[in-house]
Image: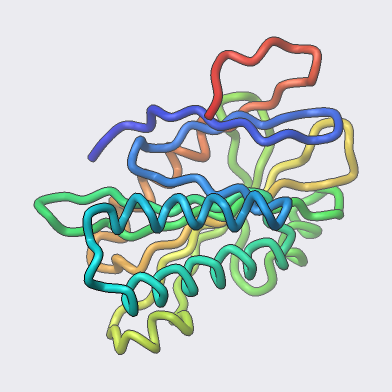
Length: 207
């Protein structure tokens, strides 16, 4: 499995966060709407390059991606990543939604309330940020539509936005239940690259 190599930065009023994802993860900015739609269009164009005889499939894929992006934006999402990694020709489906929550990260109890059901455990990120992590499984609507017997594996990270009464939420998800533990290792590795920069700091790279 590839190591994360692609830097990302998402602007905030006072800070930006840096995150490193695998090369084959596609980044869709969710705000503003025009940028979101342009990014989805570019992804569809890339995925269907050289394929001119599948207009129905192409339109359906674009509608699904736009729907996923719009749903992420409605949840306060600022960036959506989709995995196009493959191993032995098998797609390793996964996604990452990064969201802003207008509530402070001040205790595990508060984070547990944000997260809903499920046990939330404290973790320390390499950058020194305190965080909370929750892993859970559920059958999503998309999984049910596809008739899959597997559940989605979801890993959520909550961490405070520096100097603000806000939290950043990283929601990783994969339908690959048979290799869920390996995918979760990748998710944890990506979360471990999270760092913060102020606007007056010189960025060290970006997409």
